[in-house]
Length: 293
Length: 293
Image (spheres, each protein chain N blue to C red):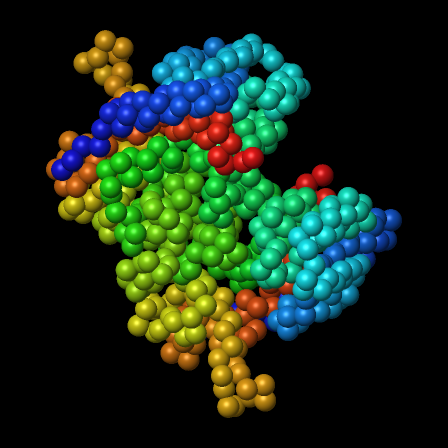
C-alpha cells in the first residue's frame, strides 16, 4: 500500500508554478493576478480564502481580496463581477461560495467571463470539459487528476467508480475520466443516493473516488484487493482527542480499507491540499492565456 | 417483450407540437422559426435537412434553408451565423454537420448564440445539461429520454450502461441519466473502445444504450433477462435483399437479443425517427422562450 501524499505534491506543484512565474517575469511578461470576492464572514470561507491568498504569495501571483457584507445585493455583486470581467490586469477570479440565500449563486457564476472563470464552474467550462476541449477544470477533479498523474496510476481500461454526483466533484470527475486522454479512457460508473448496487459496483472497481460526504462510508468489504482509493470527503466529526473538539474525517474507513489498497489518499493531507493548487494552476493558465486567447 | 415504436411516438409528438403552435398563433404569438445552414451536397446531409424541413411543415413552423457550396470560407459561414444570431425572427438554427475539412465545426458551433442552439451542441448547453439546468438537449439523447417517458420505463436506481462516449450521444446520455430527475437517478456506466469489461457491465445492466456504431455488436449473451435495450446504431450494411443495395443495421443483434428484453427499439423505426422530433421540440421551446429569455 502506498500513501498518496497530497501535501508533498501540492508543495511541489506550487514550487513549479513559482519557477514558471519567475520565468514569465524575466521574459517581461505580466505577473498572474487572481482576485477573490468574499461575501460575509463565514468561518470556513474566511479560512479557504485566506489560504488561497497565501498560496498566491507562494506562487508569486498578485492577489486581490474584495469583501462585501452579508447584506450585499445581487445587483452590487453582479456589478463587481462585471468590473473584474473588464479589468485587464485580473487574469482570473473567483466568488467564494456559498453565498447568502438572497443571492443566486448560479446567476453570479454565469456572469463571470468564462475566460476568467478559474474555478471552472461556468457552463462553458463544464461543457468544454465534457466535450473534451481545453477548459478550466474545477479544483477538486483537477487536483485528483494531478495526483493520479504524479503517482503514474494507470486509468486506461480500468473500472472507475465515482461515489456521489455533485456538480463540483462527482459529475466532472466522471466526465474527465471517460475522455480520450491520460488520465482517462476508463470505464466510468457514477453511483449515488438512488443506487442500489453501490457495494457491487465498488467491489468491481479498480479505482474508487469517494465524494458523497458521509464519514467512513466506504468499508473494507466494499473494496477489492489492490484498488486505488481517492477520498474526497472532509466532514468535521466531534472528537475528544483534538484541541479543536473535532476531527476532519473522510468518506473512507481508512484503517480497514488502506491495507487492501495499492494507493490511497489520507484525510487530511490527500485531496484537500490539491484543491487550492488546482486553482493556482488555473490562474497560471489564465495568466499565460493557455486555454483562451 | 415490447417493441418501442419510435415512428408512432414521433408522429404523436409532432401532432402535439402542431396543436401547441396552433394555440400560440390563436393567442397572437409568433410562429416558431427554424433555420438550417447546409454546406455542399452530401447525400446524407441533403436527406437529413430535407426531413427537417418537412417536419417543420408538419409542426407548423416556419423554416428557412440556407445553402452554401462546398468551397464556402469559414469567414463567410461565421458571418451567416452572426446574421442568424441577430435575426429576431429566427428562434433557433442549426448548421448541418459534417462540414468540409477546411472549416472548423467546433468554431462554427461555438459562434452560434447558445439561446438559438437548438442542436444543443454549444458548450453552454452541454455544460447546463451536466449541471442539471434547463438547456437545449441534443437530439438523440433527448429522443431517447422521450421514448423512456412515453413507455413509462423506470430509471431510478437502475443500472444503465451506455456503450460509446461520443459527444452527441454517449456522454450527454450518461450526464442526463445520472441527474436528479425522471428519466434519471440511474447508476450510470459508460463503456467504450478501451473498456475491458463491456460484457460484464452489460450483463449487470437493467438498461443498455448502444451507441458505438458497430453493426450487431450487442449479442444475446451480453444481455440479462428483462433488460431494456435502446439501439442508436444506424450503419449501412450491403444487402442483396433490398432495392437500394444496403440495409440499415443497428448496434444490436436484434433477432437474438429481442426475446430477452422487456423493451427494445428496432432499427429502423426506433431512435431514428425521434431525433428530428427532438429538434422540433427544441424549436418549440426556443419559440416560446422556455429555456432562455
